[in-house]
Length: 130
Image (cartoon, rainbow, N blue to C red):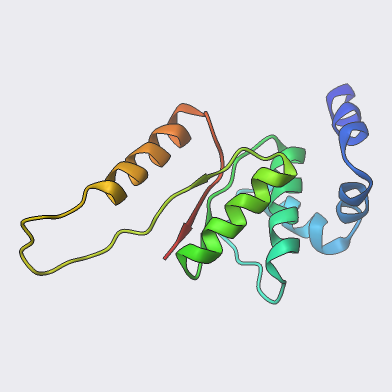
């Protein structure tokens, strides 16, 4: 309908080219059918972030992105922000099996802040390293 046409008009020329590819169409179709989670293997980080950005923009939906480590998650998050997608970094939880009297709560505060923004709809998607 009209909303779909307006969204396509607002897409960049790169998004238009990407949306015409069979692989992109398959990803979009799977998301629309609720067939996820899924992985995007074999792509460099920049195209992955562009695909996530384009899918979120076209489908007006958020995404949760899990990366191999926190450094990759932070870069992915910055890439999404550069593309105009509101994103929030969600740090991995460190496990410490020893008693600690001077434990920093910085990571806990970052995690709580990221979850709060995500749940309130203030930002999507959170990017987290495992």
